[in-house]
Length: 289
Ligand code: HMN
Image (cartoon, rainbow, N blue to C red; front, top):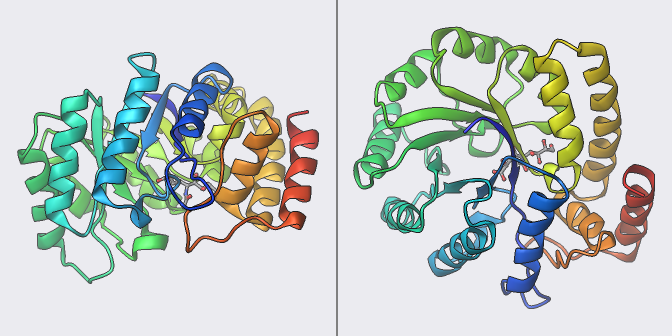
């Protein structure tokens, strides 16, 4: 389960419906061009929290059908609707997903006991593994080292997707949980995370920049830090440009330049303007042309 995972983008048509052909092309592009080790399906990048249960299921089906067993697949099933999370966990497990992941429950200020109950309920409902999705800047949920330790007592909870810039906590986690999988979640901070010993990374920009991400990962693991830093510099020039132009819209626009029908974002995310399209084309020429 180690390595580089793209947080899978989903193609939507102009009416906000899933574009199956486009989604299949994004999966193929990740496997054939970006050469990623796996896909994280149903994450933030998949615009998951704006979708219905049926749409989430359909995306799990299409991604699995297209990827088959070529790469590892993680299904993000987390939801503040715990019944939905359990339903999705069962569905993805039946499809053969290699692991589940669930975002910490958000919006309401759930206490730790409630968060623990949420994870236990999901993992007890299926014969599958679980990766905690910790993304405090979007959920507002900050868990302590001891709280992670308590969750990790359950052997089915095998790791965490750590989308935070807290390198002190990351280092403490690496030391305390040597046998758990830790995935870096911020692509622009991948190199320091790899130096601290993460097992992999899960990111949105890998849908276009997966090759560089893998290079950073491999070089840093082999102590070739200066070479890795050079690639992180180029990567962060790209990420800075992407973030300045609209994250998911721009990654989709760059994919369109590469012949992938990545389509629109789901409302309320905005539609790309002509200016955004122009800038994305420049990015394609500069970083991938
Ligand atoms: C997901 O759940 O889709 C991703 O794994 C989330 C991932 O951590 C990304 N975060 C968000 O999109 C909020 C990053 O790849 C991020 O897009 C990138 O580092 C640019 O900031």
